[in-house]
Length: 358
Image (tube, rainbow, N blue to C red; front, side):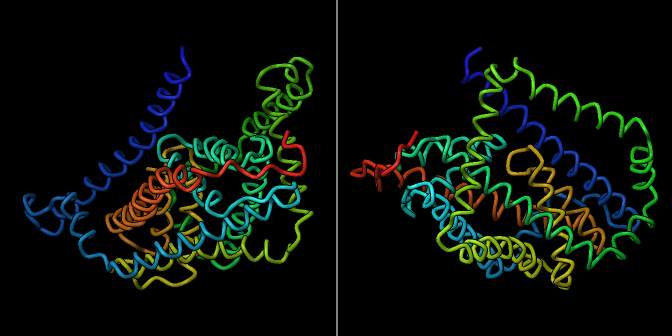
């Protein structure tokens, strides 16, 4: 089976998984909406869930969405600038246009296949900047490690501020406890975790794995990660790097928070509510579906449910922010970067480093 066929099949699997989740969410909300209409005595002809979603979209305050888009691009500009800083200790000077352009291409590619952007982004930058792909991948892996740390900090802050509310919500929804507690209290759950952990360690340490194609890739990524971490510890301006990191995630949070104001049912929610919903939504993006499609919607709805937002309205909110950022921004700016980068680099052969790029 050819690589193109495999890539296409992967795309179908992940796209289908996201689409199925989104469809199931839509169907469940449509059924709940129809039942509510019956309770309220609204004729079925006047109770169309899809029409409600369209009405919600038309009611959105565009000015707030424009501000959300502005913050999204500000976060990307900051991320590109931070990424450029990571190459300095490795002996490379990366142009801003290439850092930002390949970043946007990566986000665009993720809409087609989860994490595809993490492959195309280093390849594209390597092409324009004449830096080995391994080194570029190392900086991206180091970036992702920083993102995990920041996400954990935001999760910790959200739990610190809203633990009582979250726990009360869980206690009020016995179905959640009925599903989760049997798993967490089962010895088999922890035995399986231990088996997987030990098996993974033994596999990685085996001579066969080290010589295998997968093993070579894994150890290559580890080496690249070490290079990326090395670049962080040898930064010329570490305080600026930290400032960029904090700024990026504050922008992400404010995008969720300010989008509340764009939609009437969420306009009255608090700043702390925005933090909790942001954490839920970010966890949804981590799920391997195109751009978090479906999983993002499900977790945004779960977060908003804690604050009493009706499910039909929370589904509309999830669609509003998802289509604004993941589809409009990433498609528009991703395609723009894809078109402009070759033109901007037409006469640029890439600056060779004073050090070996291999």
